[in-house]
Each structure stands twice: as structure tokens, then as C-alpha cells.
Length: 173
Image (cartoon, rainbow, N blue to C red; front, side, top):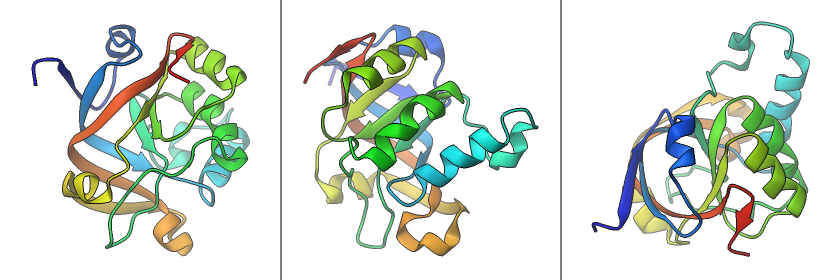
């Protein structure tokens, strides 16, 4: 366990600067969730309120983590992050303060560069819902409740495992 880095939200830019592709992580604290249904809506809300107070987004994204997943009683597990509805939101969410995006699959070179420029990283998790679900201590819908399991959730987690897949312009893919 000595080679595993433990980090807690909110994530600082120094935390990101200290991480490298291949680093093993345990992430604790509050994380947000979103996938195909919610991330385009959140992206639109950020764009529409760019010159207005950030409270229009309902949460402060600075130093946050977003996991590309739905939340149900059956558990959580990452979805494919290179779907257009998800990948197209990564730049803007990073610009709004998201430091870690958790999902699965490779991302485009454009997104790899955007993550580097925004001081954000992409982390992959083991695709094992039972392990990830056991790390969730509480869940709360933040917005888009009508989307059901794909709503925008805030999860309190302890030790979500992951591996840094993209950082500082480098990718394992």
C-alpha cells in the first residue's frame, strides 16, 4: 500500500502537479457524478452563467472530482468517457475547476491537451461496481433529479481506487 497516493477533495493544483501517469490513487471526500444525460446540461448551464455568479451552478466545482457514472441502489461503475456527450464537457468542466475526471476509455489528443492546459487529470477505476459502491458513504442529488440514476449527484466517498491515465499531456493510451 505504500505506493498508493491518498488524496482528499478539494484537490489543489499542487496535488495535480505531484501526480504522474500510472500513479495509483485512493480518492476520498465529496465527488460529483454525471454522464450522458447530465453533463451536456451542466456544460450549457456553465456557458449560460459564465458572466454571472457561480452559485447558478448550485455547487462550487473548484478542486472537485467528477465521476462519469450513474448512481443506483445496484451501485456505481464508470461509463465510457469518450462518448461525445461526456468528452465534450471535460474542457469546460476543467476550466470551471474540476481537477479530476474519473471514467474509462481513451480520450482524444485534443482532450489530453485541454486537461494539461487546465491543470486537470483523467483517472480510470477498476470496473468493479461492488468495490466502488462500498466506497460510497452517502449520496445526495444536487440537480437534474428528473434524470433518475443519471442525475447530478454529490457522493461522500472513502478510498475510491483509481490509476492516473492522463496527466500533464501524457496518456497511457
